[in-house]
Image (cartoon, rainbow, N blue to C red; front, side):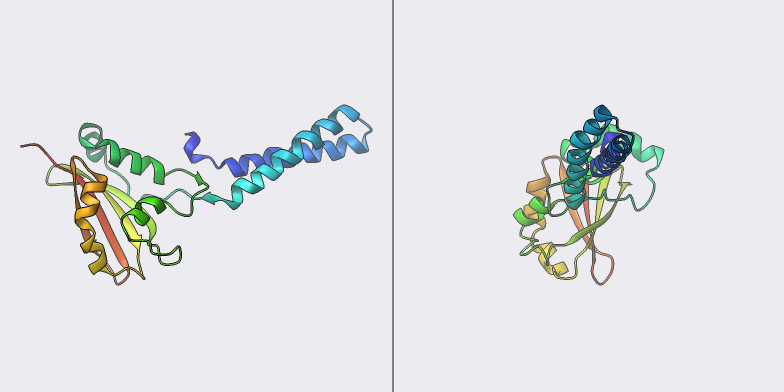
Length: 183
């Protein structure tokens, strides 16, 4: 639950309330509340501003996950699939973008301006296997470059998964990370 709450918003709200209390206490000649408002309110407010300036919003699910897929996730999802899903669906601070380090390592982010942008995710079942699908807006990195990196992605996101890359629009790429089922 805490991953769904913006720490910047909390800092701004609590700090702003304490600052207002400090000003009201100053006008009412209440030195104790005045000090609390100013000494705690301003740092919290400034901390909230700093967090808001570096905040990355959670990536939304592009479609609801069915109960069957949720059961499949519990049974088959790898540590990496769970970590990716949890990481990109929470507020993040101090990063340039979601999966920025992974994209850079994979050679899909030559510059910050050219980096593909993660726009959504969804979970589904493919031939009985759990699959996590990441949706990217990639106007500067061609589909051919994505395909060239497929083997490296499989090693990076593995073990226990395979990768499928699909072009679903002119600048839209879907990266499917699905569990390999032992037969």
